[in-house]
Length: 274
Image (cartoon, rainbow, N blue to C red; front, side, top):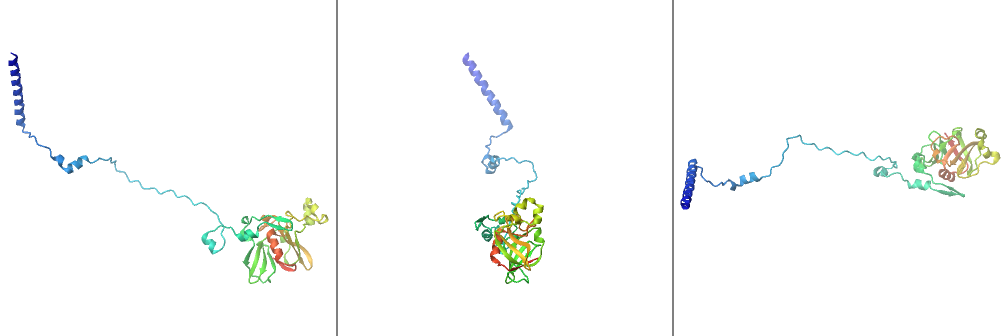
């Protein structure tokens, strides 16, 4: 019985396979090998990476880098073609020598900070057209200059400061007296205005020579027709007053400059105050 049942089962399975085969053959679907995979173009198309492409936007324009302002500089240059071309700042070795420390007759004059003074008022050789003879001193009270006339249309020019007394007299005179480290005696009018100066009055012998003496290191006394005009060319410890109008004094010069002038002019030198 069991063998008979197994035989019937196998017969039924075979019949089912035959039925399925008959049905497929009716659809006529052949078994064809896919050869497209062997085509290089197909392979490249299907294996090429795909990149993200966003929606179209206006291209971003490159922005210029911010421009930095130039470092501000303020320089004074020598009035020569070389220094105007190469832009070397002021550091004149000649001025350094002119205004360095001076030891004179037991006194030590400090160096003048010449870089803080307008260059026009520093000692220098200039062209100067005048009818005055070489060796004459000319004080230009309007421009705050003193000229020592030289031959050939030249002059040595010094910067000066002018006090009220410096405008009180004008004309022609001569340097009749010169003094190194002079004593200073205020006028009676000055003593009446400033009683504290009475200790320096002529009756008391005047102020001792020194670094704080208002007449500085040298004084040149101007006479006219043999009489003292009370007008002086002198040094000053106040270097900042040179080139300016001051409250008192006559013609003030930097101490180093008045020493230079003192050595250049003898007694009897003519002077003109404009």
